[in-house]
Amino acid sequence: MADLREDKAQIAEVLVRYATGIDQRDWALFRTCWTADVEADYGTVKHAGVEAITEYMTRAHENMGPTHHRLSNVVVDVEGDRASARSYVHAVLMLSPDDPGRWIDVIGNYTDELVRTPAGWRISRRTTRIARLLASGETPVG
Image 1 (cartoon, helix red, strand yellow):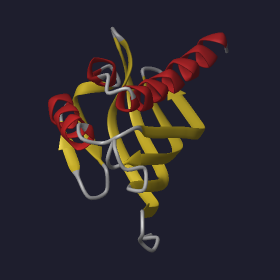
Image 2: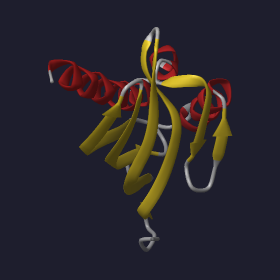
Image 3: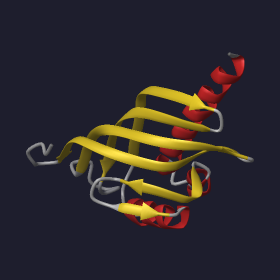
Image 4: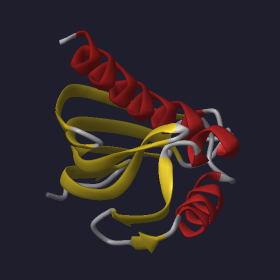
């Protein structure tokens, strides 16, 4: 049972590294969340490979102000060296570092498949479901 609790804690840590990596623009940390051949579906954008997802996130966030990715309600199931995780995401992104009135607020969930690697747990597949996206001055979508 202790090993199962440890696996779940390590998987939750991967999710925290993901959010922290984006919010701190620490792309080396962000890369530690993924397998080399990750497949990530963010609803409107799909990525294949850690290079592609890191490049996209770097470009998408480079001109933004602060971002705040919060993950909660994490549920993890472990079966040997494979696991699944589901979490809620609430992300608030300031679109401009100089204009706090321009923002995007997104809620949804991530469904992740993870594998145990020699370097620890990594996300091998992510599917995102957006429940609502609201941009400053707009009506909610979703």
